[in-house]
Each structure stands twice: as C-alpha cells, then as structure tokens.
Image (cartoon, rainbow, N blue to C red; front, side, top):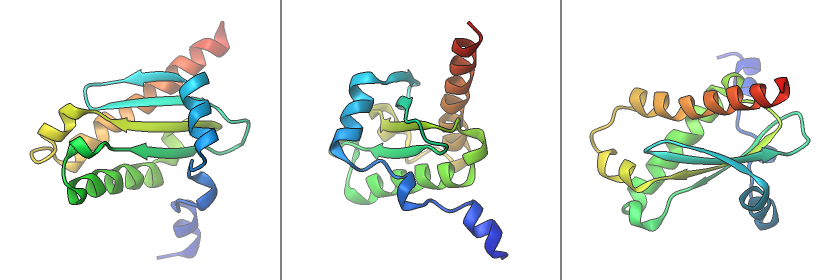
Length: 131
C-alpha cells in the first residue's frame, strides 16, 4: 500500500478529543443528533480538522464487546473523514439498544447508521449557514 493513502486514512493524536475540559465544553455548548443506536454531541472547535471522543458505558457489556464497538467507530471515522464535517469536536455516545442488537448487526449496517448521523449534522449546519 502506498504511504500517502496510509497517511490520508490515519487517525492522528491531534484528532482525538481527550482533555476533560474539551469534553465538558462539548457537553455544555454542543448541539446533538441522535438515533436509536447513537448520540453525537458536537460543537465548533475553530480548527481545520475534527476531533473525536467515543463513550461506551460499562452497562453495554464486557470489555471485549465495548472495545469492539469503539474499534468499529474509530475505523469508520478513519476511513470516512471526507463524509464527516470538518472543524468540530465530536463526542459519540453509544446507546443501550445497540448493546442488545450488537451481536446480530453487520458492520455494514452499523456503518450506515453511524454515518447517517454525520450526514444529518452536515445538513443541519448547512441550513444554519444558509439562514
């Protein structure tokens, strides 16, 4: 594989939302979109790239299951950056219903449900700019 494509699809350290103050800022000032499986809180970060944090409660299941869902979310973000609006901090929270359905859901279904929320964010933000 070519190194330029590896860099393009990378998930760099600066793209991770880690600091408590940044996560609290998203909670306090952010907007949200939700589906039956996810809640995404987001707010502008003033950068030309987005930062992401993923949250899965212990009630979701054992560590293996929680880690798998986080791996899936990171992989979708990593490979679909061009579909995700830039310049935002995102906090992605997994809902309890996904825990029940996770054993039976295919990665493609998971990906479709996940990316649909980012599409809604893009549509909402475009509508706000147009007003």
